[in-house]
Amino acid sequence: MAELNLLQKKILADGVIKSGDVLKVDSFLNHQIDVPFLSELGRQFKRLFANRPVNKILTIEASGIGVACLTAVHMGVPVLFAKKSAGSNMDADVYATEIKSFTHHNVNRVIVSKKYLNAADHVLIIDDFLANGCAIEGLMDLAGQAGATVEGVGICIEKGFQGGGDALRKKGVNLKSLAIIEKMDAGTGTIVFRE
Image (cartoon, helix red, strand yellow):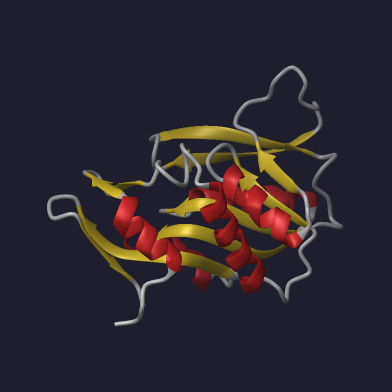
């Protein structure tokens, strides 16, 4: 068995498995944010995508923003996040798509301003979780509407047993996940990572 990486160790130490294939990592990733730890994850994403001409990071509101921002610090590029609602200060000229949320069991209309995403952009999509792949498909749709090039997708935690990541890889998406969970059991509290 391979040695566990930094994120896998953190998941085992601080993650909590809930029924319904839910992994709570809100103590460090998507509620309370362990900034030095996420900065290290951002450094890993920079290394994984160093050979790609990324000029912008694209993520989705809200829990992807933290790791996207810390990745952007290391890559020296801006972050654009797809908003789940248009406030009164949002531009009217937007790209829009619908994304089904695994976690919240609903469909969100997400938007980005056409002012900030265009055909000259080479985007790296970053998110905290990948389950069924719907969020990534939606973000890729937004990039496609803009004519932007998706250089890759970086995921902190992929639920490999739900198949979204494998389906994206079969489509040729340059997807890198820092931790892929092959199976987890709420009853025993065990997590098995893909090697």
